Image (cartoon, rainbow, N blue to C red; front, side, top):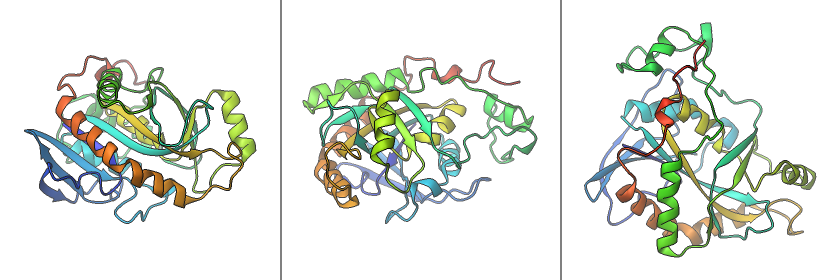
Length: 280
C-alpha cells in the first residue's frame, strides 16, 4: 500500500474517498497527526501531514521515526514524499518540479535510525516476520546501503506522469538536507552548490533513511518554491513558499491521484533487498 507524506490538504480531493482517520501509537512516540486512509479508483493510500495539521511541528522536531513506523503498522510499503525546496542549480525556476535521485545530509540532531544496538527499541506489537523484526528484536547493528537511495521504479512512474501532463520538471536532482528551522546563509548555499546540490530543504532526511531501513520503496517529488539564499538577491520569506505551494496545489493533487492509480504493486527494483547482509 502507498503512503503519502506532505501537506494537510493533499487528500482533500473530490475524487478521493476517505475511509478512516486513525491515531497510531508507536514505541518512538506520537506521529505528526492522524493517518488518513483513503481510496481512489479501487486503490488505497494513506496520507500523513508531515508537520501536523496547521503546521505545528518545525522540521527539526518532527518525529520522523514515529511517522515512518506508523506507516509500517498500517501495512504501507511504498512512500511518496512531497516537499517544498529552494533552488540552487541555476537551471531551476520557481514552480519547477524536481524528482530527487540523491541526497546530502547536513542535519545535526535528529534520530536517524531504528537500529541502535543495545539501545534498540523493539515494538512487541509489530507482529511481522521479516528482517526488520528480526534485527530489532535481536538488537542488531545495521548499516544500510544508500548508494541509490530513491526507488527507481517509483521515480519512473512519476516521470511518466509529469511527461504526460506536460509540467515543467527535472528528472534528477541532489537534495541537500539542512537542520533548520532557520534558512541558509548565502555562503552555505554557495558551498552546497560546490558540493553538487541542486535543491535545499529541511525534511527529506532522516525520512528517506528510516523508510529504507524498513525495506520500503521511497520517492520524492519537490516543488521549487523560491531561489535559495544569495541567488536572487532578494530576502527570503515563508510567504513566498506558502504562495508557490498554493499555486501548485492543483497540479500536485493531479500528480498524486495519477500516482496512486499507476504506481506498480510490485515495483521493478531491489529496494526490498536493502537489509540483506546489512546487519553485524
